[in-house]
Image 1: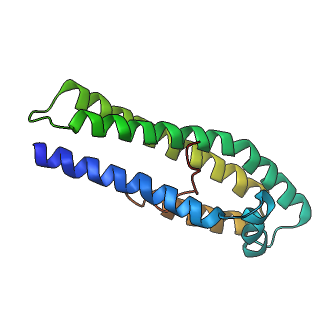
Image 2: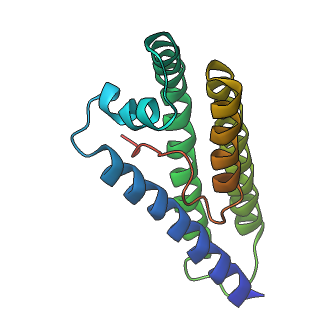
Length: 152
């Protein structure tokens, strides 16, 4: 049982670190408009579509930041609960449940945001965008999802 908990804790930690690494390398030195420029090109967005998607993106970033900060805090709490324990404790259970709840809420928010963005695109491009984000949502350990911001 303890081995399973340690493996789960390591997997969750690796997932959180993967999110941070991905975000850091994606955004290194990029201005807010630059981080969306690939989207404009990839999905052939006109100026109106791009402006609306940028507005949606700016509104979503504080939500994403909050999820990332909460997820990292949950990882710290889980690590603290595991530290030196030889038995499964209620603290471990709470920490695991908190991490799972936060990850679910993050995925829900990301998916909702993705559908809002897709609705601004042409039907064909929106469907292609949704296929892309739905594939990322199915990835394990929180990796490859919408870039997350480091907790400040």
